[in-house]
Structures are given as C-alpha cells and as structure tokens.
Length: 400
Ligand SMILES: [Zn+2]
Image 1 (cartoon, rainbow, N blue to C red):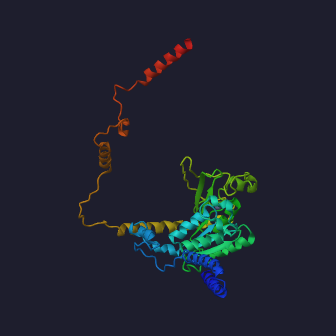
Image 2 (cartoon, rainbow, N blue to C red):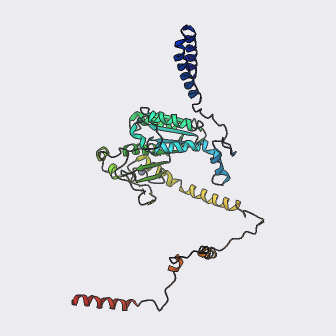
Image 3 (cartoon, rainbow, N blue to C red):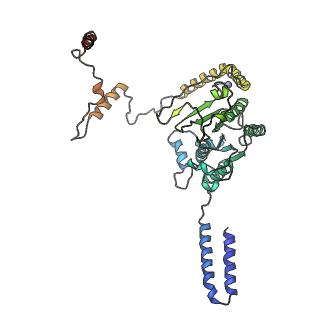
C-alpha cells in the first residue's frame, strides 16, 4: 500500500509540473497532502511481532513470555517451555472454542487445530473474539488471522469442515492422527481435544473419534438461559464416554433440531447440568464407564483399561517409593529458626488477633465464636416441660 501511495504522490508532482496554470496547483497540493496523510497512516499500522525462538524468563516489557515464565519462579510449573510441545484440537470456534483458542495462543501452546464450518456473522459480536470486519470470513480463517497476530509462535491449522459428514469425519480423524509436529509422541498426534460444539450429533462424533484413537478430550456446553454450563473430562476406558450415559435427547433418538426454541441462541442447549452462575453452584461428579455402552470402541478401551490395572498399580507404587526416597528434609539448616506450630494453637492465635479492634471502634454484633459458646446448664430448657407447655397452649386455643 505504501508503494502505491508513493507512486500516486510522484504522479501528482508530475501533473503539477505539466500544468502551466498555477491556479490549478492549489488543488493538487491539497491532494498531495491527503496522500501524505494516508502514507503516514499506513506506516504507523501495527507491525506483527516476530517469532521468538526460545522462551525467555527475562523480566522486560518487550518479552511476550515474561509473565508466563514467572510461573516457573513461583514454583507453579517446573518447565513452562514444554507447552510448546503440546497440540490441542478445538472443535467448534464459537463462544467457548474461540476463547479457549485465544487463551491457549496467549499461553504459547505449540500447535492448535481449529475445526468449524460456519462463517462469522454480525450476530456473533455479542461474544468475545470475532470482530465486525471479519463478517463473511469462515470462523477458522478469521480465528487464524487474529491468533497469528496475537502470537505468531503458535502453529495454527485451520479445518473448514463439518465433522458430522462422512468426508469431514475422515479428515478430522487423519488430522488428529498426524504426528509430524511431535513425532516422538505416543498415541494420536494431539494431546487434548476440546469439544466446543453446539449440538449432540457433533458431540457423538467427537466421542467416536476419541474412543477410536484412545484420545483424552473435554466436553463443554452452555445452557439455554446462558447462566449455566458444564465441563466434562473424558478419558477413554477410564471414565464414562459420551455414549455411556447419553443425554435423554440422544438416548431417545429425538431430532434435537426440533428442541430448539424460537428466538433462543441456537448454540445453547435445552438442558445442562453443571455450573450455575446465578446460584454460584458447581457440582462435580465422577462417572465410571458403562460396561453396556453402545459404543464398541468404548468397550474396547474399557477392556484395555482393566487389563492394564496391575501394571498401573505397580507403577504408582514404585513412583510413591521413589518420591519418598528422594524427598529428604527440604532445608537441613534452619537459619531463621522456623518451627512447625500445632494447628489448634494457630486457630486460637487467629481469633485473638481478629478480636483486637483498633482504638475507638466497638463491635455491634457478637463475634462469631461467641455463638458457639455452650449455653450454661441453668439456661437449658427441659424439652419435656417445653412440650407440656405447648400442649397446654394448644388445649387453650381449642377450648376457645
Ligand atoms: Zn462408552
């Protein structure tokens, strides 16, 4: 663009010189000024950051990974840079999928595989991520555009396809199996599949693929009223698959399209159990796989899981021993004379410190611990007397 603008500017200069009448020069000068303004704008357009070869922990404003690498210093992760070896597949780039993709990109995940067949619409602007100028683009292409700007280090793969079609499923499977990104990896070519789709049919397809590939995946959903949702971790053979305990819609074979209510966001589901934002209630539960699951691949994974149990137990025991052998005292010398205090002592100390109010302040309500003081024996009411009293009162009422 800058090149075209420069050419236009020189064309205007030539035109000005070729015009003998100086009265025309003023309008050409004006046009030249406009071109200059556009050139300045083009030059100040944001430049994409260059790729970073190694993640650095250096604390400088220009380091895109300084905040993330700090997790190592804080002892939260041992080797943050390993994130670059991981691949995550996100199926459905909607309200949930696009945000998951953005967060993983900002964290510097190694590779993201994005699947969707929809296009960006103005109606999507109620949510995060997509922008009005991306209307008409496929969601996967728009996502790649935004994500590669945010972090060019992430390898992005865009698949504009519908996984519920025969051909779509085949491409989906082969892309998950592709191991060129991390050839040494065991299992499939990705580490995690995130299902962020809006219908059960697609969920069953992700379930099928992950059962066949023995691939761990996470399922997510948002309720019709948009204030609750659910997340489910599915480890083939170990936990229930999506077909082990199918939602009623799937089990009864009802066409889910008939369940959508007019005017309700088409992406949300009629029923969802899980987090309720209005009540701030997040129940969790574990579901074992169903030995009578209708999915053949699930049954196969269940069998493998049971067969591998003795080896798994032995490995866990060995690891436990190893850890206890390695873990000696953390600090041999105690320079600061730090000692472990009994929990009960700690509690009383806490109460005392919270009891002390700054000068001039008085407590209006009794403090919490006063409520727990056992009532003195004189104050306790004899339950039998109390009942007798009530009966008398009732009799008196009845007599009226
Ligand atoms: Zn199952």
